[in-house]
Image (cartoon, rainbow, N blue to C red):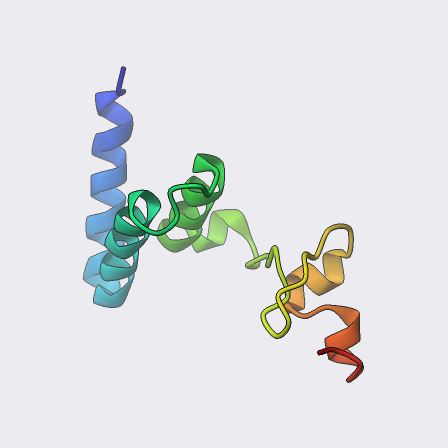
Amino acid sequence: MLDEKMVQEFVEKLRVRAADDPAVGRDVIEVLISSYVEDKDEPAAEIAKTLCELLEPERIGPLLWLTCKLCGTRLDDDDDAKERGTCSACLFGKGE
């Protein structure tokens, strides 16, 4: 069952962020739409994390990448790579 207070809090945070930066509001709506259209196999926890990063960036901290944004390899254990978004191979010019 949905918790109405949590949904209300979500809507209020969306309104506040959208008032400061209208692009954030559109980004949140696009993430929600893609969560059941394009990213339906993506874990719900990852989608929730993305929404929290958009609505409360100060709470989450820096964006952490799950895959290299250049070659697409998974960034499993390397926290530095997750913060910069590229694997070591791409960083040092040995990527694909």
